[in-house]
Image 1 (tube, rainbow, N blue to C red):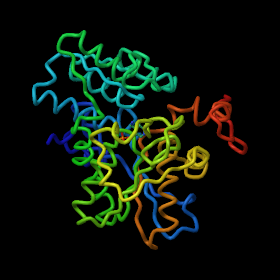
Image 2: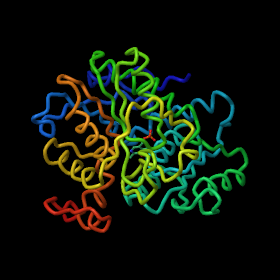
Image 3: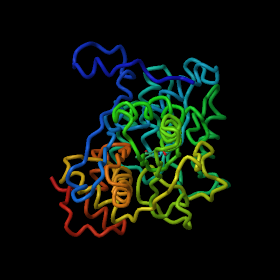
Length: 346
Ligand code: PMP
């Protein structure tokens, strides 16, 4: 198993020293306790801020591990092109690490991607191809079908395949899980994460269950419209999480058995939580963080007093100013924005 990065916590904590690579900034993200959203609750809710990774999301962890593992086992040759279908963050992570390791990166993305993320991908040098995210596996416009076609046309191109590549959950087993255990001094009782590929909840949850002899409860957070919660597929308006595919087509790396429970959170609660995190906790986070924190608060309402609930905030809100923090976008997406400050005006 590849372990990500060199130990950097001490150097970062002291604020001195020189890191040899941007990849040394990946991982060792801080945890911040909520105080206002949790008022009246007897549990602690601790938010792990993955926006502090250099590419701005938890996906930097898997990008580094996917690339390092493939380089080590010979499937990714020196200078070979990396092809991935991504809602944005994995693409940004791959572009960032690909650039440092000498690999061109092509990202197949959905039209739903925020303009900020599209600009970031381009800034990191990735080549972009738009796919129809609603298109089924048989449709030539399907993202994975396009990725397969492009990869077949480019000599030595490598598909990082985050949905099936075990280096995805392994990155979280090797880093996110141990960090949470250390940061809470083994006090964590519940772990909550949104499910996209399922890599975060599977890898981190597996680690926390194994080190605690199964005493940590693992909760998956699911958006409306996703089949992970057992409902029919419908439109999903939370970036990076959920799936429209039936269980037979769920990502192979998602191990549902690691989750004790999957909570589906209404869109209105997701976006209200994102806005409240910004104005009541000064945490500007992305929509999937609102989803996960809303699920963590639901857990906190019924968990035993004194429970320590750690929740993953996969990315920051800066990449969603045109969406989650824009009232007209929210209204168009069907979310009532009454009472929200309008972040779209300057
Ligand atoms: N939130 C965001 C913004 C993401 O990009 C992702 C990854 N698709 C997730 C949550 C879910 O993480 P995972 O793929 O590890 O389940």
